[in-house]
Length: 53
Length: 399
Image (cartoon, rainbow over all chains, first blue to last red; front, side):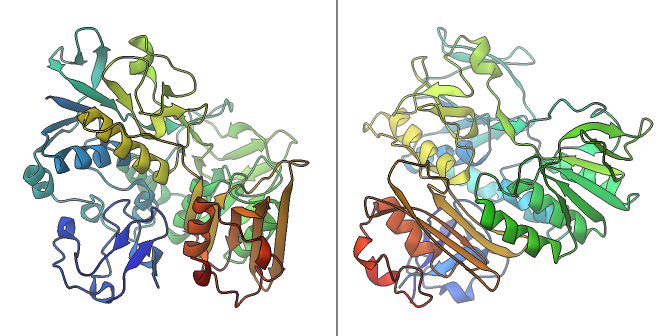
């Protein structure tokens, strides 16, 4: 599964970890995050993320 | 050890989070009536695109679980660095072992005649946004004073609310800080296409209207009509507490590379902090400073802050815009600029001694992430210089 990076603050969403602060369990692909999910570090919207390759 | 933080913006809460990660208990005092919300989201809230309940980033349980006690709506009256305690406005005294000042900044209101009239606003808090929304219901036209990032975002939000909006910019182009003349011109074009009018070189002299604002009078005599005036002319650090307590203060509270102020056991981070003469006023700097300050407050390591490469990556009124590092290179200092402008896209890359030090990417952010990383790294790109602006240049291949 791909990692995604926040363009605003550099936070990297790692599906293996999920986002415990927002109750997103490990194993959740970025694409499956809810539309209103925001960066847990800076609050940027989901569409401010780019896939890391 | 007693950790106290004043302010629950991005710097305060990031530090609280880092301290609690290390198992510390943290107390946060804030004048805000609301738990931490990312301030850029206020624009969407103003536009009515998200609800009040969606603003806070973390649920209450997040604070409880982490042992972070947030005291909302509490004003701090003063600091006593010698006795190591803060004093609240109700005279309560709160002792600390380590204190973090994360008091942020407030909108700067330039000396324009009549700014105290009804219908003149600034946008910084949830309460501000609510007041603007109420006023917007009875207004048809709005004037935004200031063509910076927040001014343009607010202009977009007001458009969504159904108002006709004019943006007044003092300088020769929009987004003075993030863009150059060519980028600013394209931004104006793109924004104009969305129905937002822009007036450049517009110095506001007075707010027109009898008790209630009806427009803005410019110094050159032009009159711009609007019953809702939003002043968006930058921010100033909230330094009063530090100043009154005798800490070294310049534009912001002066900090060293450990984010420590001139007073022992008092640290500062975010919009209130001034590091090597600079008050950054951007989220990435607030995040980095808060993490370094927290590490040093814990005393487990000597973390050093080395400054933040200014970076703004965002969507301005839905237009992708990234401005990273040096975008206004001084002449005669050996900078090289590469530019390309076509079909609604403007790109500029700034090199020094072959190294990538800055970029403007407007209308296309496809390569913003790798370019930003290469700038932070100071990567030598000289051997690709001729191909860097090619649309299919493989930036990720350089990482």
